Amino acid sequence: MMRNPTSLVKPSGKQAENGAKTLAKYSHPDAFLDLVGEEIVVSDWHTITQTQIDKFADATGDHQWLHVNPERAAKEMPNGKTIAHGFLILSLIPYLAADLFDVDNLNNTINYGLNKVRFTAMVTVGSRIRLRQSLKSAEKRDDGSVHLIFEGTMELEGSERPAMVADSIRRLYPTPSA
Image (cartoon, rainbow, N blue to C red; front, side, top):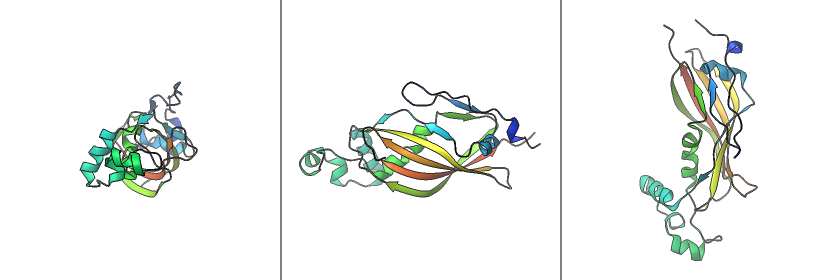
């Protein structure tokens, strides 16, 4: 039985004092069809640590000195600090967005890829970043899934330029009808 998207529960999230949104609740994946153009995610601030950078370097094999050598960075980098890998910043999208909304009647979600990614500012160790995502498009697919494209900005605290911009794509599959 197909649900009428206009009868679905709208998000219940409210703005927290730090700018992050509290948990928003949606009654069905189809609810997103009515939310195109709206900001869906504003995460808490996340501090980038050297341990996090080092673990990412180990996982990817990217041990370039400007990421993993604080002593050399202190002498040779313009700001005197190591910088996070761009792909580390990108990989934090699911972590920062994970607990900000809940969808009932959801069987599973698939990360479908990216349309655009740009790393627009260096993120030094100790910096704080925050994810903002707006729903750019939502399309109901023949298989019943909802295809979503999120326009995302990874804000860099104290900077006019974001750390990253990316269009990420997700597919939400509703729980099969009984």
